[in-house]
Image (cartoon, rainbow, N blue to C red):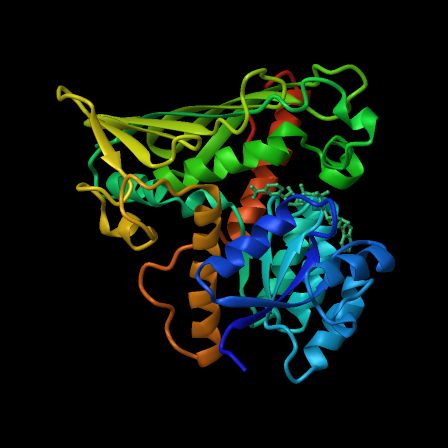
Length: 382
Ligand SMILES: NC(=O)c1ccc[n+]([C@@H]2O[C@H](COP(=O)([O-])OP(=O)(O)OC[C@H]3O[C@@H](n4cnc5c(N)ncnc54)[C@H](O)[C@@H]3O)[C@@H](O)[C@H]2O)c1
């Protein structure tokens, strides 16, 4: 027996996207071992996927409720579960495991509806188990550094935030071709009321909140479905008003040719600015007012403690998406171990929470309400 956290997975079967990323991320720092799963909505496909992963047939399930029930009873049952299904299944799956004291690591958005998000909060309040949401961009070292620099006052009072997450893969009606990931993402019953705003706008919003620490006061959203026949937004422009008078603009788009995963954030304060791009994540630009632009590199000469503690290799060797994702898993592992040992969570451990997830779904809900009223200013219904 090892002291690795015994991990289960719901979703992530053959042909799935993010389940494989979670499996890699969970292994990078060797804190977890995948021991069980319900990988698909059909028992046959779940078994085939479990066999691909080398799991014994009796730890592979065709139904996540049965998995939660049996794993909770087993002597060496799972301690934690990764939930990587389409959005509409997150609530029901997370509830089954939380109810039984099994820690949940769930992908975003938290749920497909705001009422499910709020119900999940109630379930979590009654559970000793942790809830971790994989807004993985908060795991990048230089995102941690940007956050620390702002908290330290190096930008002065924040005035302006520009954040964008453009992609191009839904520029045409891919969902009509049977492409699985496009299919559920453009279906309100599975995705929720948001299209691009739920899928990637929530990442941009969470990153904005994580880096700036500013609370949102209100927003005004103008969303479109550019592709004929599509029901959910494939493009959204959102204006943001923050506490203290700061202003922001958020753009999410899945119809912007030439853009892959071009998440980018710029923050400007009275004393200077910061700029970070997900596609070039080992660089952070710092622009102190009246001074030349400074390049901060991951784990380089100017790395902060917050960035260094989540970097693995020397500067100049790139780290990226998988390592950032792994940082969320490693932070979660430290928190899970502290809960299980009844000890204090180690200093510096940070991961997106259930509350961040509720706020993300409330953000989508507010954008939809605003856009349906000709971009009226609205507040989050938290
Ligand atoms: N953090 C990120 O960067 C990121 C990136 C991509 C996707 N996501 C999120 O991850 C989730 C999955 O997205 P994806 O692109 O991997 O989708 P996907 O369609 O590729 O995979 C979903 C998987 O869930 C399985 N599934 C569906 N219903 C199930 C059920 N009842 N029980 C067990 N398994 C079931 C499917 O069979 C499939 O294997 C979504 O919530 C999405 O928003 C996050």
